[in-house]
Length: 278
Image (cartoon, rainbow, N blue to C red; front, side, top):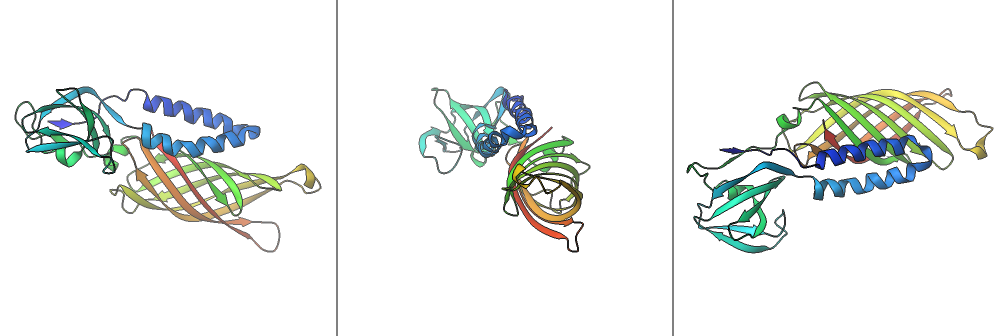
């Protein structure tokens, strides 16, 4: 028997609603600070709220001398109970490689995958678990990510929408707002992302793209006109897959802005954020 997660009880739905709400706030310039707060708390939400629940809890039997239950999904949590051989347990929830189980006595705790792989199904066969791999992620063609960071010395907020053509190639469109002291800028670009090691849980990528940047000076600089310039960028980043739906992402880019003057403008950009597959 291979154990796979069933339906998720509202985690994805809630996150999608939060994403739509964040997009609305992003498009409202007066609420950019609220959007920044959302970006800041989203990684915590992903780590502690994102998990896979089984449509029907699975019951297995302990085959090893004992099985250690921890108070939380990680080795940093203490062992509070030991299940002995031949006892039956129920697997209820998965969070990455940790599973929440319940004993016949009603005790609930967390067990790591390697221990559960030593259990037996009701038919006496070894219990098998489906690995969370990039093949699972690429069952979804689209992804959405929210990121924040810095463009030069200014804060940048970015919404990414991407389409996965295959495991090595992704095309992405980004909409960004740059919040500077003297101006507010908007950046739209299209990027090609290449994944040389798509099978890794922490998967690096290279990015190459081009776009436009619109600079709107603040009122105190009213004598300076708005400007729109073309740009190109090249960068590197990585994705860390937290569940079959959610991922953490970080990247660095070097942007070259083609100005009307004699010299082009180079700007460094770094960002970090979270995303979800659809």
